[in-house]
Image 1 (cartoon, rainbow, N blue to C red):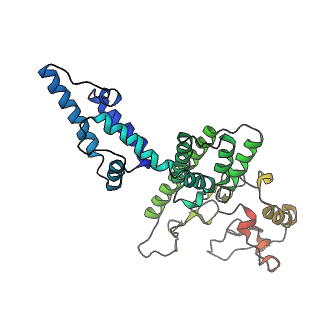
Image 2: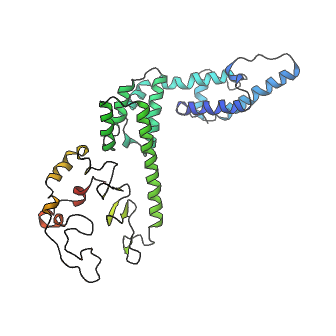
Image 3: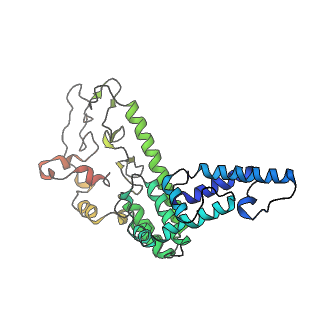
Length: 326
């Protein structure tokens, strides 16, 4: 169904593919005169009627149908070429009248305006393409800055990498859209995996108790249990091989501190170095207690330095100091 300008290109592609299968594209591309012979005339009328039926079946949307009529189209038109050309002329004209709206939307687009990264990418590509078709393209460099700026608040690590590529003059629109498509695919995969975890790791009671027999943890919908970290983390967090902790994003701030925000760097300066963390919490563990403190240690069961849990650091969130925020 043709819904208007927003799916015009898709409609056109499907129509032409359909007609190509039946070898009827020539009826919408050129003027085919009525033949003289009876058999040829019958075939000509049948071919045109078939195309008109295919097109009419896609024009059931009331707004689209009325738009064509307002632009001089006769619903009883027998020449499919006339109908096809009217559609291509009338539907985009609606967008030409709203060029300012398209320009404003493109200039102000943000990732958090959409339910998914994929929806965001689809929209920004569509806006760029339509502005080009309407001869209002802003150019590659401004378009790149608009697209990169749109993810600044939601994907800080990616944003910094893309800004670096812009500074090095190696970023192109095609490269950025490839990167964005990869982010969208990863997001879809993570959402799918989270759904599987919620289905397989939930108890009928819906509580967050641990099972001592299997040592599995049952978590809420937006959390998962990391066996390596021995704590709950966000479903989007990934266990980092470089710092051996769970954190969000693909960049490890421990390994790449130059990419970390200033607040994280300042907190790291105030964190005691490993050589200073010598105060033991305990030399023994309670009998039968799975505390992980059977020998002198400065770590807690969550893998966070025991000193951070003392009264001197009560106001500091150790997860924040250990890794990037989820």
